[in-house]
Image 1 (cartoon, each protein chain N blue to C red):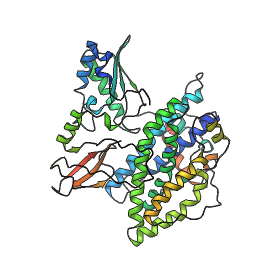
Image 2: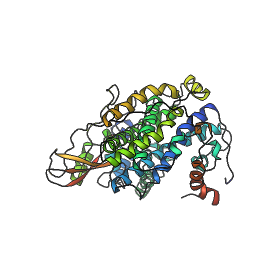
Image 3: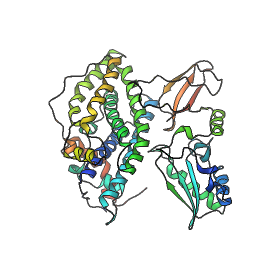
Image 4: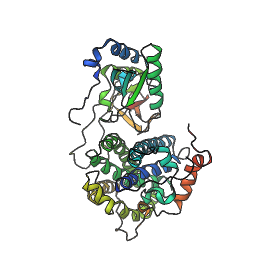
Length: 261
Length: 180
């Protein structure tokens, strides 16, 4: 099991990878805060959230393995799916692969992505795939908590010192151009919606904007104008940062094939 | 989740089988590795126990997706039942309906308080409420002095399931089991 695997990118697998790769890579990025957060409590908070995200990823990848295995061949394991794909086969949102930045950057990104995930999980409770609905039931509770944590901190940073305000505004200016990708629609979304597997991302834009606007209003932040920039990691075309994350994540499985804890 | 059980099946038909009853009693002595004040049944994660052709089947519902204690708990269930001569045992994981702190027993809540952890209040339904991303929390009672003059220090504590608080009346810090 040392060589790269090829998943059959059916619309269902593709749809689930967008969720699972997003939780995987954000979990990896949050894990990088271990030993580096501004205070001990936040060190613990960020890595706890990383654990939740990796746990959600495991459940999603297990489901993808079952679906991609199609009942015939050997079912792909969660580890194979996480560690043995080539870069172009990952389907996460671009925003989660950006380097972790400073604390304000991480908090704002967490708010944006946890809100996006929460809105997905709420709708996936009613998925035609019972396994996925079960995963959503658990993940929804976690995503809500992550969102509240990020919202709490965004208020404190935006209303804190001149320096924390400056950093928060800088993070907003940097991150906002990755929003359009989060709500793009394509054939994968249409198929998921048609099969009642899950929501089309475009339908989540309005509730997402409403929730983000509520936090920004309290924080006294203004959302920048919509960007014309289009990021493309959900299509498999990643930023230059992705290769470095994968090198770090995959090193053990590539060097010691099949190694387990 | 219509028709889904919201309590463990201990009191129901399968629970009247002597071997199943004995298994529940054994699990009463198996503690959660991260909150050792609670047994697994107190925590509400043991959902069902069945006698199958190949031995006992214990159905567990994990607390958090990423809870690092899940594997340890699974093994400790198997070890305890095997040691009591009730095995062989296999554990199956059931994800839906998702675990909620509402499943923690009254006995479990009392044990948590005695241990110095403020037990979770009832889970607030979140559907249909106006957008309120920023929390307005219900007051948490200090497990030491009973005052509600408490404040949150951190949303996460020593484990994923707890938050850090302090009491401004008796000045003691304490942990709060988050309602989810």
